[in-house]
Image (cartoon, rainbow, N blue to C red; front, side):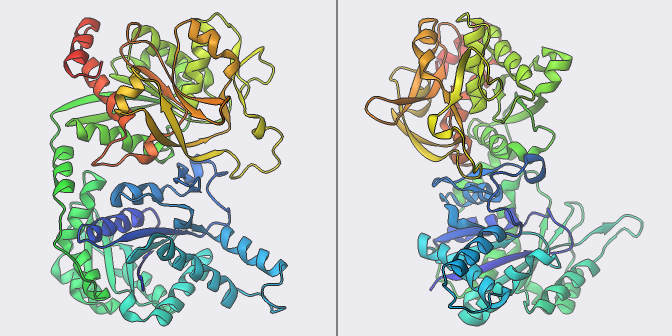
Amino acid sequence: MAKYVFFTGGVVSSLGKGIAAASLGRLLKSRGIRVSIQKLDPYINVDAGTMNPYQHGEVFVTEDGAETDLDLGHYERFVDEDLTRVNNVTTGQIYASVIEKERQGHYLGATVQVIPHITMEIKAQIRRVAESSGAEVCIVEVGGTVGDIESLPFLEAIRQLKHELGDENVMCIHLTLVPHLGAADELKTKPTQHSVRELRAIGIQPDAIVCRTGSGFPITTELKEKIALFCDVAVSAVVQNVDAPTIYQVPLNLEEEGLADIAVRKLRLETSERDMRAWEEMVARVLHPTGRVTIALVGKYVELKDAYISINEALYHAGFANGTDVEIRRIDSERIESEGLAVLDDVGGILVAPGFGARGVKGKLAAVQYARERRVPFLGICYGMQLACVEYARNVAGLAHAMSSEVDETTPDPVIDFLPSQRNLQVMGGTMRLGTYSCDLVPGTLAAAAYGELHISERHRHRYEFNNKYREQLAAKGLIFSGFHRVSETQQLVEMIELPRSVHPWFLGTQAHPEFKSRPTKPAPLYDHFVRAAIAYAGAQPSEFERRLRRSSIA
């Protein structure tokens, strides 16, 4: 029987439940325990796919094509396990499933209610993670905070599960804020007490409390004793999670606080000797970089860091591997349209990010042209790759009005266009090209050098593709098509494009999202190669840049 650890939150949101849950997963896995992590999201959307990035941040895509909460990206990066659609459950999914069963007569005429029918469905979804993954411990994060109306069915389901599975098989960890009041110059425990009281009123007694405070305000033993007394937990089970210079230090901080040992004792787990050496070495490189490089991230949602969080982390991972601090200069593409290209000066590389729609396209095209003409290392991701094709068609191949039909349906040269299967869709959610697709790389190309192999797979999320009618014309003008997904014996979809290294030292675009598979101890190959090129380029004259590239064996 799998055992379960439930993370709930109190006082305010955005305290870092996802990072804490992922950190515990990392610590348990380091002890030889098979782990999986699930997110319960209380919103009524079926998934995150149709949600505005400004409201919800990035949409993370799993191997099997689920559009999920961004916390699943943290889970994958911390525990180094590929998750699936069962690892993200929303209220919308729960109610849709129950209503469909009711329509099919599954409940035999019974009155369908939140209890027991909705909670039964929630429990079934929770159990499904262990069934599908073979995990010994399933860590489940409940979105939102205790007291939210929309979270109540999830919390009731957890209460029932603890009763059904037994106390030794279920652990509840409550993460809460212990604020510091400047006027009194002290930490206050009352918000935590009220939060735990709210949780206990629902019928859930936390087994451990994780307290979030600022890094300059450590919780004293006296405060831990006070929280333990008023919240009815052991003093040893009151754990502090302070601010850290990098999220990847959080597992090490929680290890020092003993959170994993508390879980091992509570759940009576059999463990092997802990091994966190690779993680500790990675964190040491993060905290003590030997260099610094600036990457321009050109996009349309740059005001919200979480909108491109996997790209951010993939760049950081590549920096970790190269002992370099990557500074990300987030540039709104509309800012380029209004202020000009000077905002791109003094960067080591330019990454044009994904996005949808026409807003900011002119700025992205200008950034691509800047990178191509000035020989600045360039990486185009999804829409960035598509616009790199448009820019090349316009300014090199002579197709002055080339454009994506997403931006201009009347363009005479739709270099980027719908797949036939994407036309006239009535349902938008979950209908893009989603999930993992294979890709065959052309030998001798930059892409093949980055991956070190010719047959790869990456995750996707898009509706538009390169229009193969223009492949021969652009190839004749020097554009290299270096990766393809084989649909049939006669049809291939373009996955990677690049420029010859005789023309540009490092210029590549991919239709995929390799950032989704990047790990802090194992960076995505394209990002690693791109950051190495940016490091070589930064501060060097073109001739020196190319010499460094040859020396680093990535040319």
